[in-house]
Length: 187
Image 1 (tube, rainbow, N blue to C red):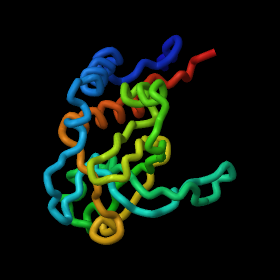
Image 2 (spheres, rainbow, N blue to C red):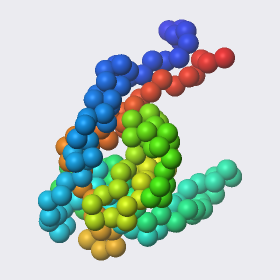
Image 3 (cartoon, rainbow, N blue to C red):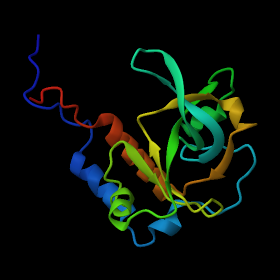
Image 4 (cartoon, helix red, strand yellow):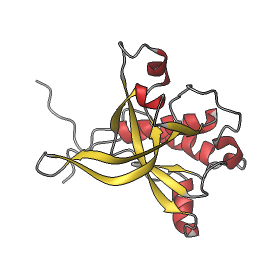
């Protein structure tokens, strides 16, 4: 039997390489114009990284392991794979979304800079989108929710679609969140 390594288990990815990708994308001078896709959306098309409007509470299991709903949420970010939307609902009926937390229209500069540099590993900054309410938000990776794909034909409406650089940034931040060092041997 192998003995466990000393210290933290390392991340699965190259931490500096991933940090460079995130910094390069988030720090681009034209980042704001490269985040949201302004082209008209085709009804019924749903992709990973889409921002959807769905007025719903967030289902969770509480400290006793009992189901509860908390925090009404109006906007959600799709983190489930795009290819799952292409598959018939009989084969893949579900996808994953995460709630966004509203930061308001005015966020102090220092706090906003930390968000815009994507320094938080559990939070993904969602800038205001062109047809939106002008609010800054973050997607909370710690509260994924499973949703039936049929909801995107009815109540869940796509309100924002990422361009490729923002989508790559989302993936980079998801990898950092899911595969970061785990601290299991921290003292």
